[in-house]
Image 1 (tube, rainbow, N blue to C red):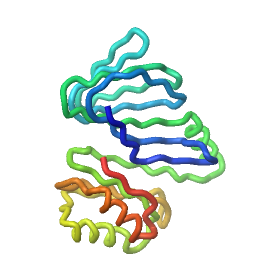
Image 2 (cartoon, helix red, strand yellow):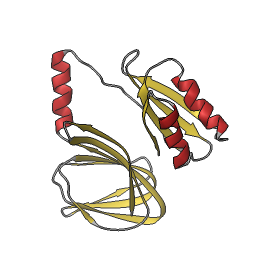
Image 3 (cartoon, one colour):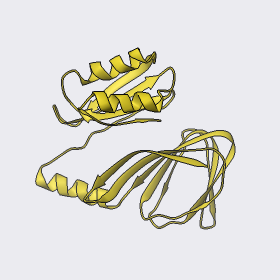
Length: 187
């Protein structure tokens, strides 16, 4: 099994959110303090928690409570699962922001039917043009694209589904050449 952590959110030196993709075949025992939401993108996977077995196929989701030991067995090849780990502190942070009048929430949705690039950035004039220009220069065609933002001129996220995978060098180029881009990852 190979885990790739594509995005992490830290606050006060504590990881609050971790988004990753699990690929391949393997079995191991896992335990962590975060809540974990698993979404099967392809293949068949079995999760074991306690004495229960959960069989997931494409589109199925499973939520593990914090401090819940579990193991994963991937059946077959080509398995991909999105893992979203949330520190319980995320909910406390959200409640704190809600009560103080700050609302930095941003809803993002995507299907991952194609190789998907997530670009987290500040909403500024020209950012979309620069990012899509880099993809064009690198010969990567955009199949679908949506942009989400929390508020005007605040945090934003581009979800770009492409006809081919953008390599690590392309992702780092976006971060380097666009100062408003905070993080780029490939799903």
